[in-house]
Image 1 (cartoon, rainbow, N blue to C red):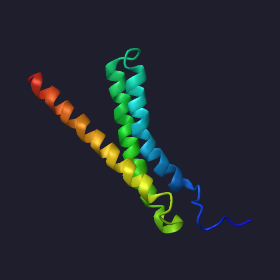
Image 2: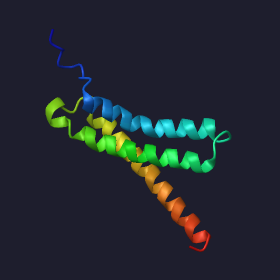
Image 3: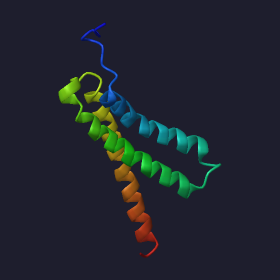
Image 4: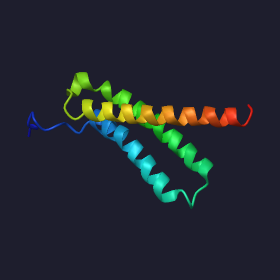
Length: 104
């Protein structure tokens, strides 16, 4: 049975686009819930990995547009790329400020 045209496909590109915008949400929940039970360094490392993964997933999802169309891919991928880019920018600037503060 053929799928209707207005229903987005659930292929790899759609799933990657969803995962891209879910990564910042996971980071926020993780920082809120686990900040007292897990070391700050470990949380920051997990957050950094999720930021990069979310960014890469969003970029890779965009490569699925020629085959699957923009529906269900473009908006989530752009949102994921934007949020992950913002988080990476904040992460890097905080890292550089901490490094300068400690004389390195």
